[in-house]
Each structure stands twice: as structure tokens, then as C-alpha cells.
Image (cartoon, rainbow, N blue to C red; front, side, top):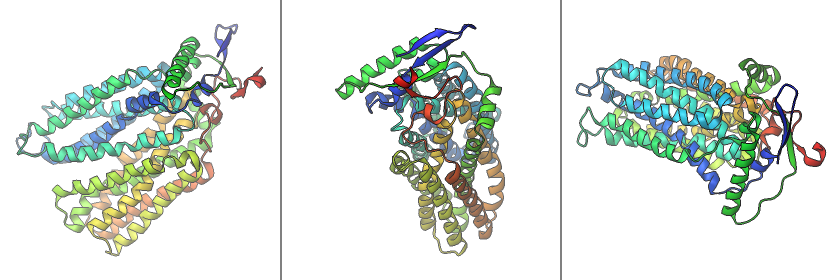
Length: 495
């Protein structure tokens, strides 16, 4: 329960057990509702990115209903999507910390749905570009709002594996996008000017289903009690406890840990930035290293994926999607099968291990490729193994920055590191790797692999020294809230 008294300037100081009560909850159907309502948006992101890449050639064809070139789709539109994601993450991340998780995760999903629907009715290139940018804004905002809410609602025991699997579900969407494109671009089924539009419409339908579930996901009680709404936080947690107890069929264990905070309606951006970079400089270096490392490894493989297969192995351009499905499945299996180890073996060994191992495996792949020892099938198999570990590592980057900074800065921290990683991967990466993977010279492609592998391995080494042992610990133990008078303490010790 919470107690409160007013300070002279009119803000309340409260003592609450809300964090401990949320963290001790057993897994239940209520948590599955949170996962489905919030986490499935990553499937939409994977669907979006893959579909647009796959329909580029169709859009440029005569009779598509849109006067645009393939280069504009994969170049200008892709860059605008990335720019929108970065801008959306930063803007909506700031709003999420200020106005709450629920309000923003509804707004960002609504923006995504509207922009995607309007992309599907594009009649001119500028219209397509504009709504690709706005779709990116919605997706970028989702990353900040959703990761914040999930971490604050999921019990500490399960937080690592849930975060990894949710972030890894991007690749479920990628598989769906590849298969959907094959179906919707079949001219025997749909006219050239209709099939690609229907792919966007199906994304909207999936988003609407998610929205219906998401309406039942509550605001974060942690956000509520810090922002002057302690009564709402207490009432909400009590209702969650009653629902979970009914679902699991037994009473919940009592808690004796509390935290005392000075409530504040809002916290300035300067305070947030100072906290991240001055109070936690080692954690900031860790976050930057993880995001930049995974961004370059992924771009080293995926940016020239189709070109490598068609140039070196004569794979027909229409068949590269099947190879992509294989590596996408490997990407999802990594977080799915390794996720629980981040909660049991621990964050530091698993984060550093997945980063270093995937980097070393990509070095080995580069060596085999340079020797001419691989075929299209065996190269894809190598990529699949590399990305099995890399995907778990990359997903842990989002987990890391969402749990190692104080509650009041969480959404902005996620947004900042996501924006940096996305910009590095979506802007610098393509500029670099387009010069290396499209020349048809094996040594250039080897260099691309080696650059991605080196940065991924380096990030793994950094995490071996700087990663925070956050497994199975309350968020308030990992980083004390800025508004707290002290960390979590037992009730007797707290007085």
C-alpha cells in the first residue's frame, strides 16, 4: 500500500510497494494479454519493411498505378522510413515519459494504421514518400512506448525472455511479408495496380486487431505513482492482483519491499540527458556499442542479400525471397530458444556471448565465401547460424537500454539509442555496404562481412566489461528512480 504527505511546495512524498507487487506476480493470462496487445507490433514492422522491399520491382512496372522507380522505393522511400522512425522514436519517446505509456502506445499505433492505409492508396511518388515517412514515425514511436510499458508490467523473473521474444518477433513479420508478397504480386490472382495495395490493406487489418486487444492494456502503475496519481496506481495494481489470483487459483504472496519517492508531474529534457550521460556514462557507452554493433552486422548481411545471391550464385531474382524466409526463421528462433537463458544464466554472459559468437561466425563465413567454398544454400545456412545468435544479441540491446536507466528516462533512453542504431544501420550502413556488395568482386563482399563482424565482436567485448547484471531484479534495483529518496527497501527498514 502507499502512504503520502504533502511537501511545502505542494508535491507529495509517497511510500509504495507497487513495484514489488508487480514483480512478484506469477505468469498468467493477464500477462499474455499484455504481450499480445503490445508485443505483436514488431510483427507489423517486419511485415512493413519486407513487403516494401519485395514490391519495389512491381511498383516500378508500367501499369502499377504509381509513377515511381525501383531505386526510389529502395532508396528515397527507405531512407524516409528510417528518418521517420528516428524522428518518431525521439518525439514520441519524450511524450511517453511525459504523458504516459498507454496514451502514446495508442497514438503511435493509430498513426501507423492511418499512414499505412494512405500509403496503399498512393497516386503519386510524393504521396508515397510522405506516408512512408509517417509510417516510420509511428513505428519508431512504438519502440519507445511499447518497450517502456512491457518492462514496467512484466515481472522481473520473466522480463528478459519476454523482451527478447517480442523484439525477435520482427522476423515473424518478415517471413509473413515475404510469403504475402509472393501471393499478392501474382498477376494471375491480382491486377498489377491492385496486389501491392492490398498488402498494405492487410497490414492495416492486422493493426486493427492489435488495437482492439491493446485497448485493454492498462497504464503503467509505475508511471502513475511517480506522476502524482498514486490512488490510480494502487487501484490498478489491486485489480491486476485480483485478476491474476483468480486465474492462477491461489492467493498471492505478501510483499515487504517499498520505495519512497517525491512525485513530479514532469521532468525536463536536460535532466533526462544529464542522467543518461553524466550519471550513467558506462551504461551509455554500453547502449551505443550494442546498437551500433548489431546495426552494422545486420546491414552487412541483409543490405546486399539479394545482390550477393544473384551476382555470385546466379539465383533468379524472383527466388531470393525463399532464401530470405530461411534466414528470417533463424532470426526468430534465436530469441525464442535462447531468451530464457538471459534470465537464468544472466545478462552479461549471454549478451557478450551472443555478440562475440555471431561476430566470429560471420568472420568464418567471410573466409569461406572468399575462398569460394560456399554455394547459395550453404551461404544461407551460414547466415542462418550467424543470425540465430545475432538476433538474440540484437534483441537484448533493446532490453538493456530499457532497464538500465531510471524510470523517468526510460522511454527517451530507448528512443535515443534506437535512433542512433537505426541511423547508423539505415543511413551509414547502406552507403558503405552498397559500395561493397554490388561490385561483383568477392573481396569487396568479404570486407563488408568483416566490417559488420568486427563491430559486432567489439560490442560483445564492451558488454563483457560493462553489461549490468539485471536478471531477475526489479527495475528500481537496477536504476533508482530520479524521484526516489532511496532504493527499494524492506518495510521494517523503511520504517
